[in-house]
Length: 559
Picture: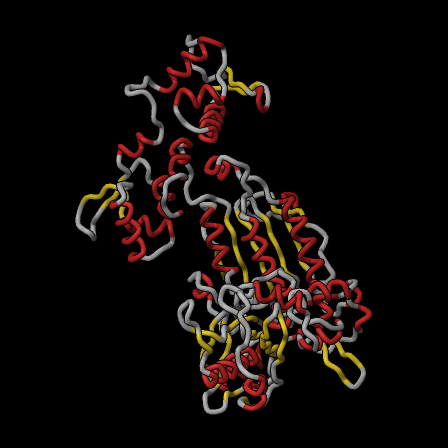
């Protein structure tokens, strides 16, 4: 198949991952680089091509540095021919060879590797397998077991009755832009094993229809779609007290379903008052990446042999639940997801690869770890995973791990040169001592990590400690708390300062509060909002004309 140079340029610029790797053909220090030894390069080509074939397919490009700089292939034509033929000469069963491409004034070697139906061996060197951006040795039995479970046995591989005319060609070409190859849509589908040529006829597989169907009528699966419900409360009620609002099911291709689901759910996710107080800005009750990743994963990795139910999204007042039919991939365990380490196992590898080329998914296995990170950065509890009764469920909770009772202190802590877990601790335990065990519980980490982070905070002056290592208790130094709201050497009580300003002009502004207490605009806004919540102040006007006047709880006799 001809190579699209623009698409190759985009591919080279991407990160290495499950479906792509780049290798330099030079080595040595800058200014003294030499050609790599040819035998080592041949061995590497054999290993990486077999590893891609034993996993989900992929592309290997030789002549490119780690940073994406193209330095080319320095070998003579006869040696290049040997390298390109390595997949045929060194692998069993043999695979198609690579291609030499002139690119930006250099020659690069490109190996486009399709998924092999059975395990591929490097002659004399075993069975490598691709896992994210690494290659690991495996066994023939393990690789074939994976292929039987995820490749040959998956419903995405079943023959469909739809034809190429039933698919959205523009959408197929959009996916092709994410690969390094050009040509006809049918050839792309065949290369991704979403179709096969039988003589002159292109026969589609179900995965192609699920991804690219023009209309739901072409889709034979009865529950490919997604359902959304909003529950008014934290549990469902029935009968006369029914508190569930349901929405029409989203049907069509997976991409259409994703777009429609995102559009609806983004309108149902509310701004979080509690997170607003922590961040001093409008903040959704769930981080966008976290809930969108949960939905993408549910559609991409669900068990499509289960035809009795669709992917379901339930929005409660305190949580979001995303459920997909089927249990985890047989090679995955729940504790692997909770470990935050990147993992890549796909029940539907054809669909997953195309969604990656469309930019809907990332191939680094980073989705789940990033969900944890996004929830953590929003000071929310980590995602929860469970499976039972043939259903896998992700739960995102919108209750913060803690709430800030002092907006000025929270604003100060956010600016400190500390990690998220350390900042969370300074706010969560601002007014009391705590042991390492509580630090571990709040942050979801083990004792060793807690010890390192707490020790760093003590060394930096952010915590004080007493007691032996095992029984140590920590507290925020008083001097640090005083630094959060600097003011005059002996400031009168804050309420009294506001009383004096109010008595003078009858109102206070955000600028007045900043001047009085020496805080920034965001901290002043948060503190004034808290006074409004308590009924001490009332807001008049908007934006630049906003000012605060005495409320029902304003101190009596103070003007």
